[in-house]
Length: 184
Length: 184
Image 1 (cartoon, helix red, strand yellow):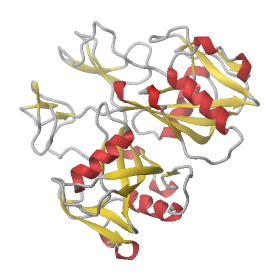
Image 2 (cartoon, each protein chain N blue to C red):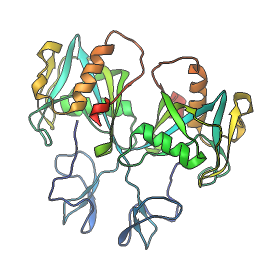
Image 3 (tube, each protein chain N blue to C red):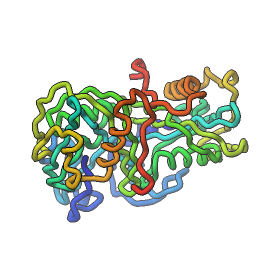
């Protein structure tokens, strides 16, 4: 378990030209700055989001940005520095739908290795039914299960999270689901 | 839920000088290359690892690298691109202890926002008791609970994962633990 804190004499960004090579003691190529020692570690990114309910209706957002502009998705997005996964899921609900939510359970941890993403989708309760489109949404809405626009869902992982929410909606505590094998 | 795939006309690394400013449509500063459009998104990193058992003994590794050189830890490390969390935990067990493991349950999702880390620690079974120190370990060992070198544990999250493993060791399926409040 490593902290990988940069040594104190290495700056946080490169000062000189970078080259792709294997740093000492490692087994794969990284972008390395030969003049200052900076190593650009690129690691998978975490997407945090929620299946957020008001009574039995689910919050969905119609995307206003590519990819999948105009398609429906859950409020979710990239986790930012110095926040927790739960804080990130709350922030995304606010940014995309001006929704205040209370996180309940972790529905799924979905790996999408093709694009080096790990999605962590939580079950949540809306604190108010008043929602509105944020900058990255064309519109937002609360949908009963049968009214979900199934043919206009943006990403496979939205289907996974909705299905797994449905399976566990009456269960208080459960282990998070993983991506389905066919998702890989 | 965004893919954040770079537009096709934007290179994967900066071609010109970078500046710290807020990109259009965003709310926080990023390192941006003004000549090519590259935006350096920095996001939390995922650490994947395991509490790996042979019978009732737990695999621990004495670190050979800073930070905490000479202290004991679980086999764990940064997740790499294009692998899943489980593949990453398996890889780390091999790299740090030449251990082959079979992942069972997700013990904990531990946020450490101060250093922008999310640690995902799995319960695992060793496929063989033959383990040996990898490049980043001084030595490795299998420890009965009472023989764990509690005073020489490298990181608080190792204590969390071991404690949470202990609490759930007879339970097949359970929701993952989070970091304790005092850990923040």
